[in-house]
Amino acid sequence: MAIYIYNSDELAAIEKACIITAEVLDEIEEIIKVGSSTYDIDSLVKDIITKSGGKPAFLGYNGFPASTCISINEEVVHGIPSREVRLNDGDIVGIDIGVYYNGFYGDSARSYAIGRITGQAELLLKTTKDALYAGISKCVVGNRISDISNAVETTVSKCGFSPVREFIGHGIGKNLHEEPSIPNYGEPGKGPRIKNGMVFAIEPMINMGTPEVDVLKDGWTVVTRDRKISAHFEHTVCVIDGTAKILTRGKDFY
Image (cartoon, rainbow, N blue to C red; front, side, top):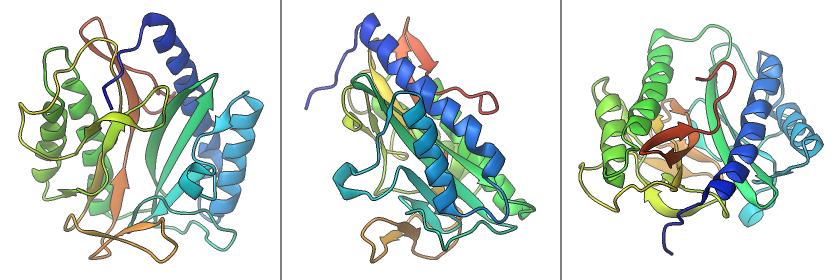
């Protein structure tokens, strides 16, 4: 499938879906705390998205049973919310949501510290977020897709962390997942040239230990093979006037 080049009207529509996505993540922060169940977080996400006039993009996507991917500690991505799972002091949790609004999609993820976490966990969160912005900085007309990938890998490898290889960023817009694929590792200077009108979901998934992962028996939840913790941050960005514009910018997540 070719990479979509979106016009100004389409970019405005994508941005609206992304604004809702960021607003939802802002609004749910008050219940991302010790004792909250992942089911309650998911229910609130669904309620806010629906009241905004949108639809949860993940609900039913390839059979996914919830509106939100909620992944705790060694869970990398695609964790399924549950009434039985509650957030505990010392956890880190990744919240990933997508919104479908008037024919277009937005996608964003943030990882949070629950209570008091270790210094290494704090470093993992900071480094993963730094890697996201390093990748975004390479979304410049004339660069290649792998320049994004290399910036992510370079940032995290300095701290001894590992980018997940099996799950990657992607194009987004009319579809939740479009070309191009955007790995979080690799040599620079490869892949398609970046052009104005392209829209990307850039999402470093970074492990404290080795990059290897497994999928649990539920068919969705991805965990680190060594069971060390993992962090995940994601923005949807468009390329306009030669550089990246972050479409899922929230009040606390610059």
